[in-house]
Image (cartoon, rainbow, N blue to C red; front, side, top):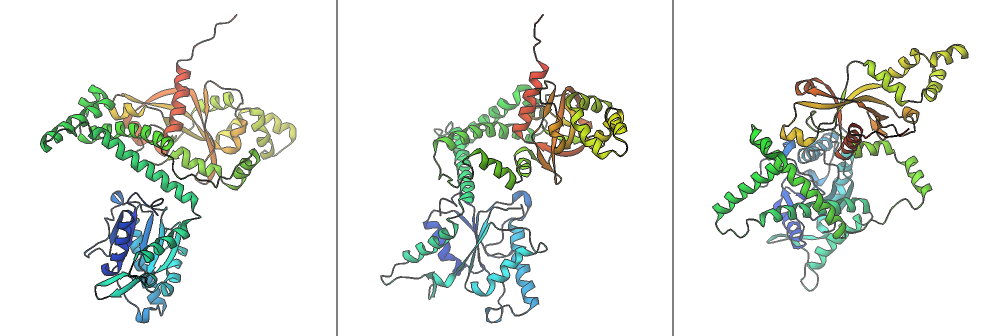
Length: 480
């Protein structure tokens, strides 16, 4: 099980510690880090902090099904008892998984597993209880492995008095249920690589103070190191210009993140993880089939855009309240109007001659403009924002349009125009077009008042900035 759960993201929920103890011992013996709770806020082992900002992500949850209440004969006899059962377990899941944790597996862990498992599974059929749907539910029965003795619950023993066969049987049954989840395992492997890389990054810096014997001197020296690392990202002037420790800490964290990214890349290549073998493409035709089966624009949404808590960051996209005159010029320059006019002619009623005439007129542009969303994108370098080295934010203008217009963009390499890949936004497929000639600026106070849509992820933002830099510094061509 270490292949899946070795980053401290296993949770055991059982209101009776003496029943959970043998499982906790077995997890420890197998070097699987875990967190234990009795499932109640006020107990010896209370629920974890439910504040969303402090919530943890869990991969594996062992869950007792008869928590904090006992039904007569270990049965649910009526609708009221079923609502109580569902409400109790839903509250626990919603409290622990307050951060919309979706990548977890539940192991039903109960003495009355056969009596309660069906009621538990119905939880995930009704959103009024919980939206936390596990990736897989595995059902186990405690009595198959544990025995109540004078000392409390213990693993059963074989004829030679050994508990190991039952411990191994428990984990083997879990692994048999997981063996086909190769995709989930690959995510767990990546989680482990990131966790290991973070540890190595920290250790690399801590090695600078490792030889200092005195605790106080070590802490003083590490404070100097952290200060210089923060300055390495923000610069002298930026660091001295910060008004809060939060800004200085941001610079340190961002510097460390860049180093971590390198460590992750190297560890992915150097430390061979368990390889995923269930790839679905061997030929070009296979890839084309995947595009038909999987909504790749929805997948692009995950790859290209996100929704951070701040709307003044690099890559932030804003919707303009008014359509500028410049948008019409952008459309005339970047679009094959004859291709778009085919759509317009089908839409426009009237005689063919009149429709073709309108397709070359301003009525045609009105038709297109009405179907686009005018936008601006913040392309200010993130380091300038963190270091407070900007007077105004740097802005590009353009539009957000339906994917059906993507093929209408001119195929030639427009040096002044940037077209994004197609991605899903608000349940429709769209792309973004930006005119690099519109490069301008915007005061910080205006950014706060803009209508925020979403933020481009780093790779797409870097691509836009690279194209913009090439456009701004583009050399002319000498020719006769």
